Length: 155
Image (tube, rainbow, N blue to C red; front, side, top):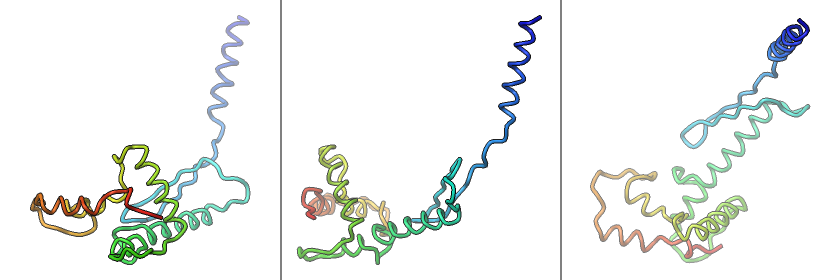
């Protein structure tokens, strides 16, 4: 009888614990880079306003898009990619960080990851520039490959 009592007591305690109200999940979302973003938080530190946090997240994503979107012809990276001179091109600290990390990843992967692959991406029709369905010629591929190589990018 005592054993049954403790089993029932344990069961009641467990079910009671499961019925306690859990904190509401905070859902934040927005749009960026032609898609959407979403963050779900189970709690926030005291004094953090969810609307303010959402605004800060959106501002940061907008900055990344403004600096590094290959789909925005006015972005920093698009202007850099259009720069035909070998003269130095000024870039933001944020872009420097991304390029430095990309260079490290390129080295660690022996070039399997290459930040400079944009000309090939565009040639094959996976980038921002629309192109027909024709397969690129060998000459076009060679010309694009001549413009690729993470080791050629200097900061």
